[in-house]
Amino acid sequence: MNKNAMLPDYANSGGRGKTKKLSAEKVGRPRRVTVNGEYRSGINITDEIKTQFEHVINKYYRKANNYSLKDVYGFILRDFYSDRYKENGEIHYRIWEPNRIPSYHQFYYWFKKLEDPKKDIEFRKSAKEYDLKHRPLLSNSEVETNGPGTRFQIDATIADIYLVSSFDVNRIIGRPVVYAIVDIYSRIITGIYVGLEGPSWQGAMMALDNMVADKVEFCKQYGIDINSR
Image (tube, rainbow, N blue to C red; front, side, top):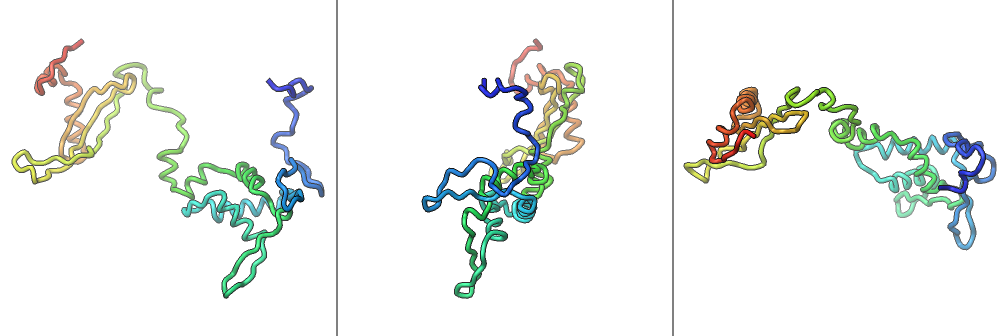
């Protein structure tokens, strides 16, 4: 759905992934923004500037301070593209003219090329955060099951409530631990147990006992009528 698709060897057009050979003139799309009515061409991104980008990304972005990309771009201009001067005993920075500095869009373009999501998250958050929320899932437990009853999973969760004594409502007896056994293939809960002891093998054994129990009789103990169908 693109008229350029009619060009011969369109798949080979553009040189995707190839590094451009730079000349003295600015390459890429000309800037549309003017400064005082004058177009400023900007600068080419050389290997030296790429090294500056990588240095600042490692120094400021991959830190627990969680600086934004805009902040990191400001650090680039401050560290490499500014003049320092003192005023009232304090050091200040005067950023160079726009035609002597890389633009934010240039920095963002090369940041995406240098981006390493795993490293970024581990340095900005933690390795635990990456493993918990961002690591790639290459498989799941359903792959190893052939049908219902092939494999079960058990989990214990401390409920987000506090129970009080039936003899004295002013006395808190603790938070209950809820055990659940799930059939991996069908995702049906096959056994439950609620106790006050911490997550333990004893609680897991009680959940397993409930898994093999007759659920019709079990529900009848709590005034719930079900049938086996």
